[in-house]
Length: 174
Image 1 (cartoon, rainbow, N blue to C red):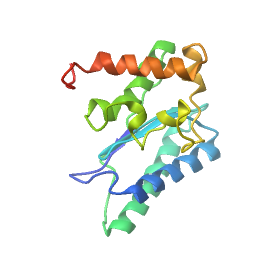
Image 2: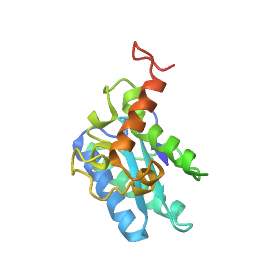
Image 3: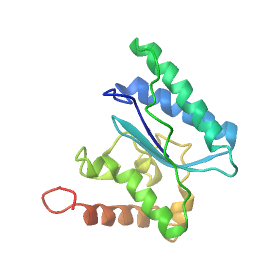
Protein backbone atom coordinates (compact mmCIF):
# COMPACT_ATOMS: atom_id res chain seq x y z
CA UNK A 1 0.00 0.00 0.00
CA UNK A 2 1.24 3.52 -0.74
CA UNK A 3 -0.35 6.94 -0.53
CA UNK A 4 0.71 10.57 -1.03
CA UNK A 5 -0.59 14.13 -0.64
CA UNK A 6 -2.18 16.47 -3.17
CA UNK A 7 -0.27 19.15 -5.02
CA UNK A 8 3.12 20.06 -3.63
CA UNK A 9 2.27 19.21 -0.04
CA UNK A 10 4.52 16.88 1.89
CA UNK A 11 2.69 13.97 3.49
CA UNK A 12 4.64 14.50 6.72
CA UNK A 13 5.89 17.93 7.83
CA UNK A 14 7.24 16.94 11.25
CA UNK A 15 7.57 14.13 13.77
CA UNK A 16 4.10 14.86 15.18
CA UNK A 17 2.60 14.11 11.76
CA UNK A 18 4.60 10.90 11.52
CA UNK A 19 3.52 9.75 14.99
CA UNK A 20 -0.10 10.66 14.28
CA UNK A 21 -0.09 8.42 11.20
CA UNK A 22 1.58 5.59 13.14
CA UNK A 23 -1.01 5.85 15.94
CA UNK A 24 -3.80 5.60 13.36
CA UNK A 25 -2.13 2.61 11.72
CA UNK A 26 -1.80 0.83 15.07
CA UNK A 27 -5.47 1.48 15.87
CA UNK A 28 -6.43 0.13 12.47
CA UNK A 29 -4.35 -3.05 12.74
CA UNK A 30 -5.78 -3.82 16.17
CA UNK A 31 -9.38 -3.08 15.18
CA UNK A 32 -9.22 -5.01 11.90
CA UNK A 33 -6.89 -7.81 13.04
CA UNK A 34 -4.41 -6.83 10.36
CA UNK A 35 -0.69 -7.54 10.54
CA UNK A 36 1.72 -4.73 9.72
CA UNK A 37 4.66 -6.50 8.12
CA UNK A 38 6.58 -3.30 7.36
CA UNK A 39 6.19 0.42 6.82
CA UNK A 40 8.37 3.28 5.68
CA UNK A 41 7.44 6.94 5.90
CA UNK A 42 9.10 9.23 3.41
CA UNK A 43 8.43 12.99 3.25
CA UNK A 44 5.98 12.92 0.34
CA UNK A 45 4.51 9.44 0.71
CA UNK A 46 4.31 6.33 2.83
CA UNK A 47 4.57 2.60 2.09
CA UNK A 48 3.11 -0.19 4.20
CA UNK A 49 3.17 -3.92 3.73
CA UNK A 50 0.05 -5.31 5.40
CA UNK A 51 -1.40 -8.77 5.84
CA UNK A 52 -5.16 -8.35 5.62
CA UNK A 53 -7.11 -11.57 6.30
CA UNK A 54 -10.34 -10.42 4.69
CA UNK A 55 -11.68 -7.82 2.25
CA UNK A 56 -11.48 -4.85 4.68
CA UNK A 57 -8.52 -3.07 3.07
CA UNK A 58 -10.64 -0.43 1.30
CA UNK A 59 -12.68 0.41 4.39
CA UNK A 60 -9.59 0.46 6.61
CA UNK A 61 -7.66 2.70 4.24
CA UNK A 62 -10.59 5.11 4.02
CA UNK A 63 -10.47 5.35 7.81
CA UNK A 64 -6.68 5.81 7.95
CA UNK A 65 -6.58 8.42 5.19
CA UNK A 66 -9.62 10.32 6.48
CA UNK A 67 -8.47 10.48 10.10
CA UNK A 68 -4.85 11.32 9.27
CA UNK A 69 -6.01 14.00 6.81
CA UNK A 70 -8.25 15.58 9.44
CA UNK A 71 -5.36 15.65 11.93
CA UNK A 72 -2.93 17.04 9.35
CA UNK A 73 -5.31 19.75 8.10
CA UNK A 74 -6.21 20.86 11.63
CA UNK A 75 -2.58 21.07 12.77
CA UNK A 76 -1.35 22.90 9.68
CA UNK A 77 -4.30 25.23 9.01
CA UNK A 78 -5.09 23.50 5.76
CA UNK A 79 -8.53 22.81 4.26
CA UNK A 80 -9.79 20.47 1.59
CA UNK A 81 -8.76 17.10 0.30
CA UNK A 82 -5.33 16.09 1.53
CA UNK A 83 -4.77 12.69 -0.09
CA UNK A 84 -4.05 12.94 -3.82
CA UNK A 85 -5.85 9.82 -4.95
CA UNK A 86 -6.89 6.39 -3.79
CA UNK A 87 -4.08 4.46 -2.15
CA UNK A 88 -2.22 2.01 -4.35
CA UNK A 89 -2.19 -1.68 -3.48
CA UNK A 90 -1.65 -5.13 -4.87
CA UNK A 91 -1.75 -8.68 -3.57
CA UNK A 92 1.51 -10.51 -2.91
CA UNK A 93 1.79 -13.54 -5.18
CA UNK A 94 4.35 -15.76 -3.43
CA UNK A 95 7.40 -15.81 -1.16
CA UNK A 96 9.74 -14.24 -3.69
CA UNK A 97 7.21 -11.47 -4.32
CA UNK A 98 6.91 -10.89 -0.56
CA UNK A 99 10.69 -10.54 -0.23
CA UNK A 100 10.84 -8.16 -3.19
CA UNK A 101 8.00 -6.00 -1.85
CA UNK A 102 9.59 -5.93 1.60
CA UNK A 103 12.96 -4.85 0.21
CA UNK A 104 11.28 -2.17 -1.90
CA UNK A 105 9.50 -0.72 1.15
CA UNK A 106 12.45 -0.64 3.55
CA UNK A 107 15.00 0.44 0.93
CA UNK A 108 13.03 3.49 -0.19
CA UNK A 109 15.15 5.98 1.85
CA UNK A 110 18.38 4.34 0.66
CA UNK A 111 17.38 4.49 -3.01
CA UNK A 112 16.34 8.14 -2.53
CA UNK A 113 19.76 8.96 -1.02
CA UNK A 114 18.41 9.90 2.42
CA UNK A 115 20.51 7.39 4.35
CA UNK A 116 23.20 4.81 3.55
CA UNK A 117 21.45 1.75 5.05
CA UNK A 118 17.82 0.79 5.59
CA UNK A 119 18.34 0.42 9.34
CA UNK A 120 19.48 4.05 9.56
CA UNK A 121 16.08 5.53 8.62
CA UNK A 122 14.20 6.46 11.80
CA UNK A 123 10.76 6.30 10.15
CA UNK A 124 10.90 2.72 8.92
CA UNK A 125 10.08 -0.48 10.76
CA UNK A 126 13.24 -2.22 9.55
CA UNK A 127 15.50 -1.42 12.53
CA UNK A 128 12.84 -2.76 14.89
CA UNK A 129 12.44 -5.93 12.84
CA UNK A 130 16.14 -6.75 12.94
CA UNK A 131 16.37 -6.00 16.68
CA UNK A 132 18.22 -2.69 16.68
CA UNK A 133 15.33 -0.71 18.21
CA UNK A 134 12.03 -1.33 19.95
CA UNK A 135 10.35 1.70 18.40
CA UNK A 136 7.58 -0.08 16.52
CA UNK A 137 6.57 -3.19 18.48
CA UNK A 138 3.29 -3.54 16.58
CA UNK A 139 5.20 -4.54 13.42
CA UNK A 140 5.36 -8.28 12.79
CA UNK A 141 7.64 -9.26 9.92
CA UNK A 142 7.60 -12.95 10.81
CA UNK A 143 6.20 -13.80 7.35
CA UNK A 144 9.25 -12.22 5.72
CA UNK A 145 11.73 -13.61 8.24
CA UNK A 146 10.27 -17.10 7.72
CA UNK A 147 10.91 -16.83 3.97
CA UNK A 148 14.62 -16.45 4.81
CA UNK A 149 14.83 -19.36 7.22
CA UNK A 150 13.63 -17.63 10.39
CA UNK A 151 16.60 -15.40 11.18
CA UNK A 152 16.50 -11.60 11.51
CA UNK A 153 20.23 -11.71 10.63
CA UNK A 154 19.33 -13.38 7.33
CA UNK A 155 16.78 -10.63 6.69
CA UNK A 156 19.39 -7.96 7.39
CA UNK A 157 21.82 -9.65 4.97
CA UNK A 158 19.08 -9.99 2.34
CA UNK A 159 18.17 -6.29 2.55
CA UNK A 160 21.86 -5.29 2.42
CA UNK A 161 22.35 -7.43 -0.71
CA UNK A 162 19.24 -5.93 -2.31
CA UNK A 163 20.57 -2.45 -1.50
CA UNK A 164 23.88 -3.20 -3.20
CA UNK A 165 22.05 -4.59 -6.21
CA UNK A 166 19.98 -1.40 -6.54
CA UNK A 167 22.85 1.05 -6.13
CA UNK A 168 26.12 1.40 -8.00
CA UNK A 169 29.35 2.54 -6.33
CA UNK A 170 28.51 6.23 -6.70
CA UNK A 171 25.20 5.79 -4.85
CA UNK A 172 22.97 6.21 -7.88
CA UNK A 173 20.14 3.92 -8.81
CA UNK A 174 21.13 1.54 -11.60
